Image 1: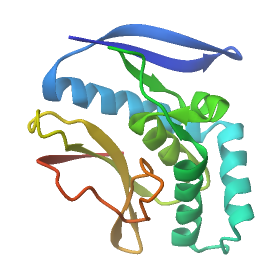
Image 2: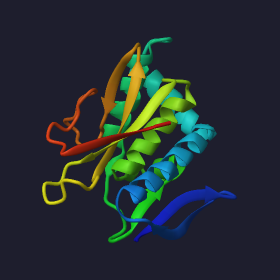
Image 3: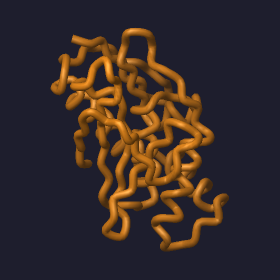
Image 4: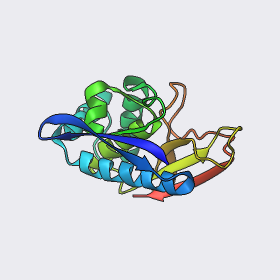
Length: 182
C-alpha cells in the first residue's frame, strides 16, 4: 500500500484528503481514476476555463484550429507550471485548480491540468493518459504519466515534463506503456 494525498478545493478552501493506494498496476489504475475525476471536474471550473481562454488568446492560436490551441496549452503547462515533486513517500495528486493556484506540480498534476484546460474549451474530444515504465531499476513499474490527444485523426503526445520536450515528444526508452482513456 502506498500513502496518497488528494489536494482539492472544497467550499473555497484547499484541503487534502489522505488514504492509501494498492501497490502495482492496481495502484496505477486507481491513481489514473483519481486524475480523471479531477480533470473532468476541473474542466468545469471557471478559473480553469478562463486560464485556457487567456492562454490560447495570448498565443494567437486561430479559432477552430484545435492543434494550435492545444499547442498553446501544452507550452503554457510546460513553460509556466514548475515541475516539483510529491510529498516524500506520498503519492500527491493535485486538482487542476490547486495546480494553477501554486503553478507547480509533478507529471500527474501537470497531466491532469493539461486535460482540464483542453476539456474546458472543448478540445479535443479524445484524450487519454499514457503511463510508462521509464526507470531501468524497475522496468515493470509505471513511473511517469503524460497526455495523448487525438486531433484530426492523429495521436499527439503532450509531455510537458522537460522544457525541451516538443509537442508530440514521447520518451524513447520506455520498458512498458499503458493507456487510460477518458
